[in-house]
Length: 240
Image (tube, rainbow, N blue to C red):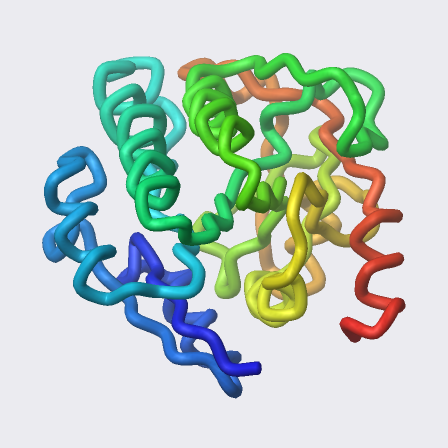
């Protein structure tokens, strides 16, 4: 059944992927300039006017990760207060929210983290995304997607050889999200575990190498690979 989705961060790279892979739904993509989520009144105005079936909260302050270390006030305002505003307005109008979270909220020590694993972020970016999760979890009509997404084309000249993730190309993530619109709770979204370098090398054979020891402006986890059993089970049970 076709749904109307209001997408925050609507002029970003991932929103464009969602538009590219959308088939039956009506997507209304709003940039921060059009709807600033740090203003609850702006969120209220647009949600009341559009009346979406789902609000897909993609917009966030992300990279460079060092910005969260240097300006945590921006992290709080955009990723915690902004997400809280979106949740409050969704609650007001009984609209489902789908929140794009991150694999970075896991401790990054042993890897293979499931949705029920303990969470303990190692940097301020991840803490800000977990802060957003806390607001979303207080609203039952919600879905949290902890995503390990590889941007294609890869935006950097080098990739980490000693950090493991369950990366999935952004095209694949976009396709999967449309298959999970009816879900609630929390779902890990990613691919098979490998080093960031090996993942990226598949899409950019000329990628250079970098190690965790070369990064000194923010803490980085060593292994945030995820157990994606739940995602696979849902996709294989009529959502594929």
